[in-house]
Length: 239
Image 1 (spheres, rainbow, N blue to C red):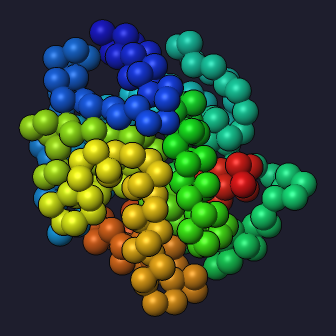
Image 2: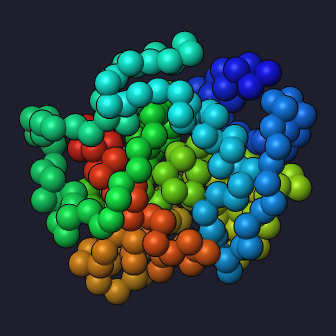
């Protein structure tokens, strides 16, 4: 049953505007969802139920990114989609110093990416360009979404939802981020995130986790740092 679920969840996210709603998925996938985490005033990291579904959707634990060998039908395509760190800077792309000027903080995490996640990352990066926050802002945005939703455009999770948090950045309509329809529109959600980021004094010179946390007010303030390297790799390749 779990294998069926891992194939089904990414499949419905091929369009970057598709909203993944996991309400009722416990019955479909035979999953045991844990209790929701205590919500922060604005947003927080994905709760246990969302993490379980996201981990299954991303194939966590089913792929060896060190050897590059797929397991249980997982297809290994490239360093970007498998989560393997990149070693070369593509021509015409931003440098590592531009993307991670302070260096990464602490142990880093990586997840394989499917087409839906890549499409959402591209939307975040495109909005970073439009809003003027540049490469560094794009890294902060992608890292934040990796933490909040693993780059999936999550809809309302029913009884397992963290209050009314939704979308790529788990923004809460009740906290003024916009309507449910707006915060689950990747372009709108990215624009709202970067608009708030630009109001953070000196955000370009702050550690990533500080800049992200000032916007998100998460219950897990140090969790964003673990995604900085993968976010930089994604931005470097997709910029």
